[in-house]
Image 1 (cartoon, chains in turn yellow, cyan):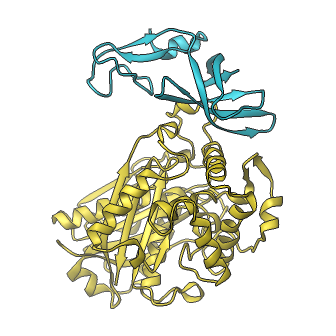
Image 2: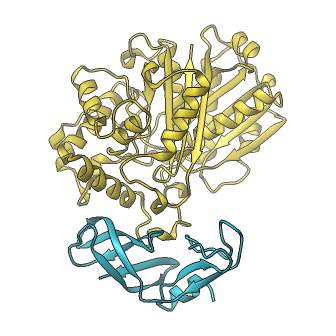
Image 3: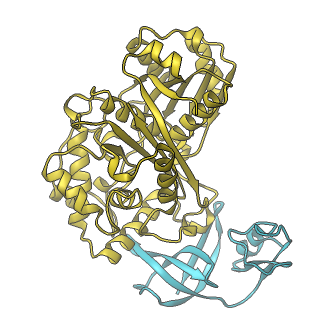
Length: 369
Length: 102
């Protein structure tokens, strides 16, 4: 198997500052080149943009703005896991020999059309994500006898960790009581249980083994990839308390990397809403079913940043097309021992979990030094 | 007649494949198993409440029909898991489906 490495990365802060999608893409790409002086534009032979934005032809536009004339240029849209799906496509181009070095740039605006899947009419008038999240939350609480206070621990942990992330949308620390007292959206969901759509962009360069080693002295390799789509309809989920697509994708990724879940030292998981974190931890094999919050509490109590060190989607913000790329950059930084105050001790193997539309689709990546 | 046309008239129908008899959900023109043409079953269908939560004054529920179809519907009275309900009102408003159960 051809080795594919992460050669460079850059990002913008995630904010509510209104900016054009093209400007966001340009800013994170500029940051990427500023961070990596050995990278040259002429070596990039493919540009993939990850976004749900309605603007067209974004990859050729980005290429023109940064002075690249790639062989391959196109956009990938897959709602919230557009970012990791773009990375998987780039990996495939390199592994097949169609390209040697690829720029993947993800960006989203706060008003992204990707937030609501209009096609899913089985949801009736309840198409906003807070409704599927409320159903997940109610089911999870009912099945495992979990209180709202216990679930609030996810937001408390992830906001605390986001405070150490200079690019996160939030710089605040919240208590369980703060979460409980935040605006009630439904009977089962409060404002601080939710990640926020925002403006942001993250970019990454994947390359062949040889080119990766030419650019960085600290290469990180993609060693495992797993993807699974079970449906597009929220109500087609067989369970509202676990993530079937995540379970299958994780098994595939870990098998490809020749690892098991206990080998993972650090992970970014898709906490779109607080209940998603324990559900993901359980479906990824990090804890038994119904015990995900025990792990959250343990990590929180010991100030261990192993899960969602950058603050997850809840603390960092959720610019859909950039999220999976931002998660991948975080794990890369962790494995490079370059995560500053967020650094997890002895991080050698990392995992990224990125999902779409109420876990109807999941992508899992394994990264290693 | 399409599912949407019937729904816009306030009729909830169940799409079924005319070849393999499988219920096809979400509604499409052809069976997602054998690609056979789909016809619409009429009836006074009984659904079961699988899960629910509450938004302001109304409950929103996941309702299962024929052990296959699940939709999200509004309900004014407090629901119970496993409660049997029927569609009391449905339609399309501003291009959005809506379902009420009681």
